[in-house]
Image (tube, rainbow over all chains, first blue to last red; front, side, top):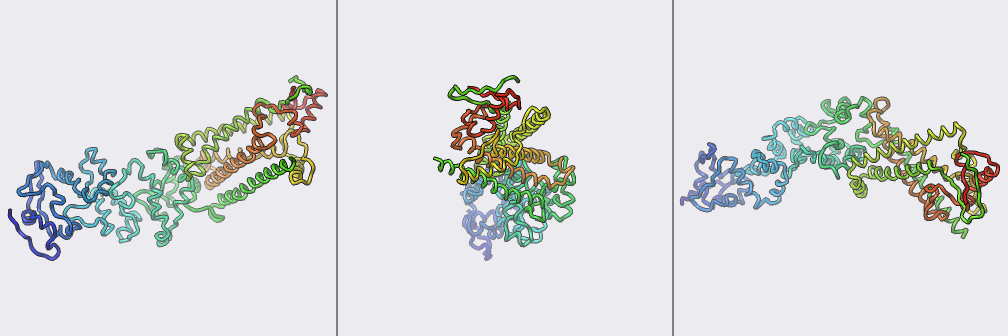
Length: 340
Length: 250
């Protein structure tokens, strides 16, 4: 066994990984590779400086992840390709990160992988391996990580009101994982995710603290729920499993990755574009039709006068009517008792 | 119709046929349809409550519940149209008396009843075929039906409405439909259930609208003016109106 103690730089000096002696071989020659049957060359060099600065540098020894490499020389598992190696090491993160590992089992990437698509993201695809850093530092890094595979969607997002904010360093705007989650990512295609948008969007859009910065209303979810779409969606969610004929949720009108301010000419909810947006579900919609939706406003004497008036009328007549009838019943019963 | 009014005083429980078969069927249809409309409509108003979700899932989901609601709504609309069409025909053919029209007399009766309840009079007013409470409930239902049917149609076809009229009518119709429905539910559960079931005079169940029959004793008590006219009409053999040409059978 050859022991070579690599340099004594302050950042990585005495990191636990060095105690396994692995770096004696794997830390020297940066061009060190292994030939795989697929014809690929698997790099087996580990930069101890990079590893030392990673989140695991101060904590893990090589054999904590490479559990089967207990001696020298060690056999290599018969990996056919690079991807085989990555897939095999998927299980290794579990021993420490059990909660997040379990979450991935409910995620769309795992489901796609289980169906045989080996390109679906594994731990290392997003987090890296020997160079793992905190995924959310800085936050914009998250969206760029997703963009490695989901480039098309990222381009659309980057032009949206949220994406532009994120690029400008705004810490309030959502990055991919704020809506999609990081580990238990829902399949966005079957509608389960969009059915949850009133909560997802509501997390920020009902926060007085956050919305006041941008002079945005926090009543958007309440007013949505009170209207036909919100009421229907609430009741449909209990019984429906798919998106077919599901009432409109946030993203159906505002867009998904291309959300803009409603004053932006490119916004789906801008006044001039609204009829078109309504027509997605209401094919016969004409120019008066968008007024059927109160644009997240509570009816007031100024806005939606008619709706406000009807509301007021019933607020007065129902107690008057019911109170009057109950009073008459009470008087009648009293008379019956007195007569006896 | 040749049936002459026939009052028997010799048998212990004489009764009078108060409602025709058509009227009984109309009540039955309204009762069933109204109940279903409440069961499928109120959960939509109170969509946030747990009971609303349970009720909707009993019907097999909101889509089924909504289909039932609309079917019942159209049935109610049709029965309302039928009711008025047949009433207009009957009125035009002078085959009926306008017993359901509210008059000043009903207002006086209401005041007199309240005075009686409060002990300011020794006895309540004497009523004809329908007392003021029954007229109030009938016209309340009629006005309610018209509002519910019209606003309901707006809610089924919002895009059609917006082609001709301002779109704001749609949310206004929704507010009206939702509140008018709640009011109808409250009036029926409080007022009608009291008058038809819990009222000590009829407790536990006024069967009159189902069997069509009412006892002579109750007629004397509740509709003495109609009874007098019936018996008078029977004696003179004068035919007045279908429901006034009632048998009084022993």
